[in-house]
Length: 75
Image 1 (cartoon, rainbow, N blue to C red):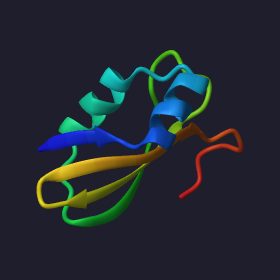
Image 2 (cartoon, helix red, strand yellow):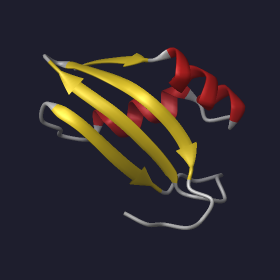
Image 3 (spheres, helix red, strand yellow):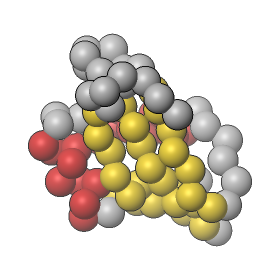
């Protein structure tokens, strides 16, 4: 499955110093159907869990946004 990053997601990744390779690795391990999904993962080296919002359509995963959940882990 191909992973694309929106302009917004690239800027959030740079702002919060989250490597795109880390996000790609997380998405490669996830089996997702078509639609919009929210993933919350604890990543080593980060104080807070990271929330990833993605859209899946025709074998293309588009990362919409990425940011740390500063108020704790909630779903």
